Image (cartoon, rainbow, N blue to C red; front, top):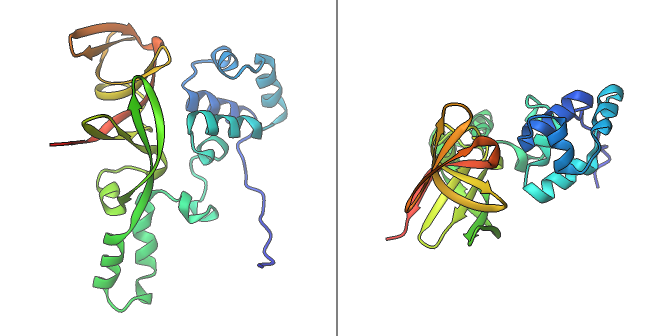
Amino acid sequence: MSNDNIKAFHYLKGSAFTNNLKLQTQCKDYIELSNLLNVPKSTFSTWNAHGRTSHELIVRLHLALGIPIKHLALPKDYPHTDLHPSLWESHEFIPRIQDQAGFYHSQTETRQIYQHATVILQRFSLRHGDLISTGESPYAAQRMHELRLKAASTIEVETSDTIYLIDQNTQDIVSGTYLIDMDGKIILHTVQRLPEQYIRVVFPDGAVTIETGKVRILGRVVLTIKRS
């Protein structure tokens, strides 16, 4: 067993932590965050004043919403080399291999290793408005890099006839197909932003206009695979 100590990370604290909670949960203010988490609004003020972090909330949000712990607990620019390699983002895989190129016999061998590398995505099935975890799926690291996707924030969602890759980092609607939570039910639909904080959701038999605050955006479809 190694004698190296596992050192504490430099976690987000105080207002940096609570503002990040709002960002990650898409809450517009502390009142909305208080209602979502069942935590008194005054508690956030105390954390801000005394520079505190709630590790219980980090774990709770990770388990309930699937938000990666590093996104909840650490600054965006936190050095990835301080984390376990499984938590590194997919686009960082290329320089990691290039840095080690001298270990291999040739540049061709180095390139082949990268081309055969995979990342693991969480996989879900969408059934009757419920998102059900069905395990994990390996994806080519090179393809993820080409799509500019990060493994930690990308999920695979399967319906009866289609497989979707969802970028959970894209949560601001412009136009496209989005995974959204509407009244507690998860749906995949074409959505378009309208003026004055409204969106247009397209259904098979028509379209409806909804206030943006009435839905929660879970991600945008970046790749669709249709079964023949």
